[in-house]
Length: 111
Length: 111
Image (cartoon, rainbow over all chains, first blue to last red; front, side, top):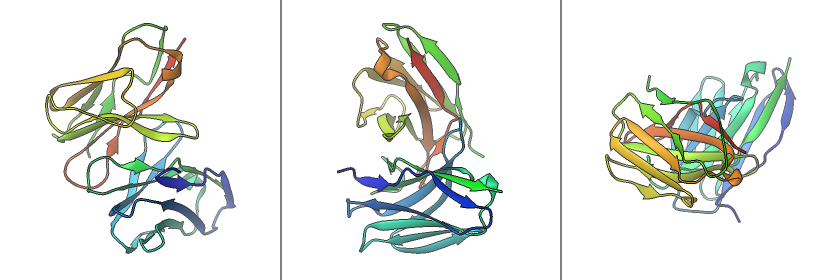
């Protein structure tokens, strides 16, 4: 079993939809949880990070962490075609070393 | 903004060649990482370095070595390239904060 599981998709939604992306994990020692966005032929870029449990909001994006269920989510409101990308979750025990990544979910937002 | 620059976007090498992938970051980050990214497998850590001349093996170090002679530069070396090393290679760096900054990647094809 992988340490971090993520549905590869693709997830196809119409413009304006609310998108929910999720990851589950097995290592209860993880404390830092991140979401990266990766456009085609580019490196991943950090979208958001949270420490421990709870919610964090940044514009149209909301990250949720439920440590009791070992489950994290990224919600995108009012999705746009420019949101079409692969979204990777990542987590670590410490803040800066040895991130463990999910395999990524490919999101397609159609106009 | 931190910039992580990978010297080549695309490389084609022959089996058995020694291959050098170069990565330079411009924000004095202590920690640097090399990942490879393959469909269905996600990002896998090859090596990382937390200081000049220091290195640690990641999850898949076999067939690779690294060099960090200067703080800003982290090189990945394929001692004798093989076809199973055809992949996207991503370099990343971070200071002591959460999250990495990635380069745009080098797509290596070994023929």
